[in-house]
Length: 416
Ligand SMILES: NC(=O)c1ccc[n+]([C@@H]2O[C@H](COP(=O)([O-])OP(=O)(O)OC[C@H]3O[C@@H](n4cnc5c(N)ncnc54)[C@H](O)[C@@H]3O)[C@@H](O)[C@H]2O)c1
View (cartoon, rainbow, N blue to C red):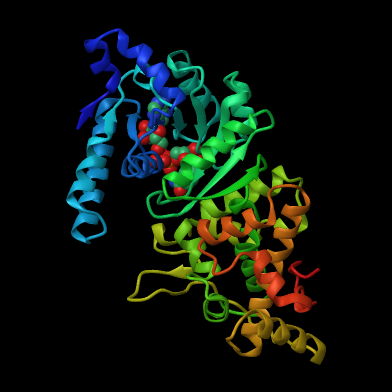
């Protein structure tokens, strides 16, 4: 495991620092990652595997050593699975350095802040490091929910502060959202997008709005599923199976909320809803909030929408099912929607669930586009590579054409 390159340079010669300034103009291919937790370690691995030198920092060196040991284990597994060669593994491992002082970042073209989600802590951590940075160094933040503009203002570096939002686990998830704050130089956002692409990522450019693209546009996938439960039209299994079987989603919305954690998922929904001035489509689900109040947080507590204590999960929410009672026109709307959207057929309930949830998703995607959150193509990219949707909402809506937004019963507000 290497030590910070600045320590070595200091021992070598003062000429080194002048050379470093020149190198930065040509790209030093050195990134500083501050925060070696879940995301920081993942991002460090991505950059090191892409051939960048990584200066990794945390509250103490022991935490960084532990993170690097974890990354090395993951690199070993890639070799075992023949997804990487021993040489590639060794180069990546050698690229990881322990940064034990801000001076270690003096040669960085980019630093990525990945500490806890707290504006004051992020500003304090960055404030300590900024004096050591080259004036060209890009300051990126991996924040999920804070404003990039506010972080830039808090550190007095708005022009070079940019959002670089990776998804968990960073080495596996392809998407990086690049977020331009109100005063971020466009050239800085462009350069970060290029760097992310050179690290093998798909980039979606987004405005600095709560939840950026994914955590904002994907909300109805979960919320509309909870509303169908609240309406009493379907059980959790029926809802999850409809989305998997008809839509080809890897996970149904309700099992996914159990995996994410009901507390995390609800908190994100509530935060986005509040920050966007409470749009009806994104109203948090009272049923989901009750699960959190009861301590049923999902897989991590053994129970959420499903109970995980047995051999296979079974629904832990009792629904007093009521008949769907679609009239002829509604039945035709739902089945026409499904015919246009997928090769699968499904029964009437599955068609209803699928059409209702997907329509809500399309509506939210259109709202986001209308509000200038991102281009349609970026929204499609974000949902395909950030949450593994089989198709982007705009490409899917275009395929469905006039059957889009069927008018269906229920308290959900997806249609229209
Ligand atoms: N976990 C996710 O799924 C996810 C996904 C995308 C974005 N994010 C964002 O990434 C950031 C980090 O999240 P995480 O899940 O990796 O958290 P984490 O708790 O796993 O890691 C945070 C790390 O920051 C370190 N830290 C705290 N104060 C520090 C300081 N003063 N100096 C240096 N290091 C310090 C902690 O010791 C810890 O190792 C947050 O902004 C979060 O919103 C998280």
